[in-house]
Image 1 (cartoon, rainbow, N blue to C red):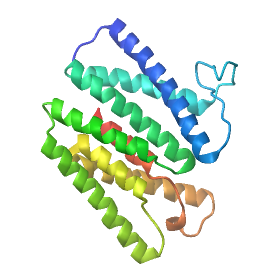
Image 2 (spheres, helix red, strand yellow; image 1 turned 180 degrees about the vertical axis):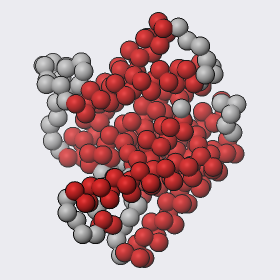
Image 3 (cartoon, one colour; image 1 turned 90 degrees about the horizontal axis):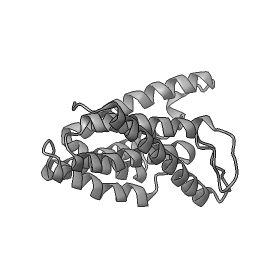
Length: 227
């Protein structure tokens, strides 16, 4: 972890909060696009289409989280190029998780758009490699495809969607074969625990029938690995 001045961290936190503002607005765009509804921004900046909006806890949390993650990235990344590629990847992970959490959809534009960023990071970061990136993509997508097929055969319904497959392929570009397996394991455990607790609180007799988006849990695990 490199040494950074307090002023540098403050500037990066401000940049991250602004990026979180952008993440919220991008999420609102995709939510409106898929749901055909009007949304109003209500984050820390309290500005929405030219008028004030009440602060929403979830939007403010995204901006705070983006600020904190940006500072961590500044401390962890060894050079400006790696930092410049890591920041948009972590903002994209936040955006994907936010959209999936609300409407259980992972837009192709975002998952496919993350792949070139991940490949560039693998090519420029000395701790990663392009062969590892392609291997991570294959392992992530292959695991998702096999798991979805087994789940469908056993339960007769879809367990993992194509969006999760593309998401894991994206994560595999910067995680590599070993890292993507760690992301899958950690994300699966977190999702299972959350699903069990939520199903119990809602009185569902079959916890396995409880539906929840997998993307936010995979995204949280990917952020841990990325940083």
